[in-house]
Image (tube, rainbow, N blue to C red; front, side):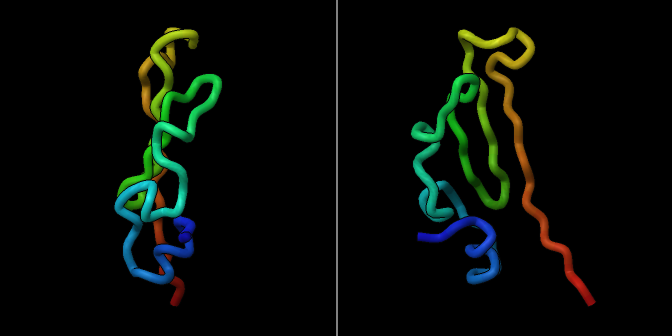
Length: 72
């Protein structure tokens, strides 16, 4: 099982999906406001639920992009 930071160090690319990243499937990563969390090529995206949440976040997505900083 890999974790995303180690995956990049070992493979030189970001994981294609949740399984490659070594995390649960998107539909299994949920929360009070979160419907699912997907991993795809260095981007982790949380999709907010459509009901039972503030109208400002209904169905919205929050994405975090991974980056690599080269040190010389």
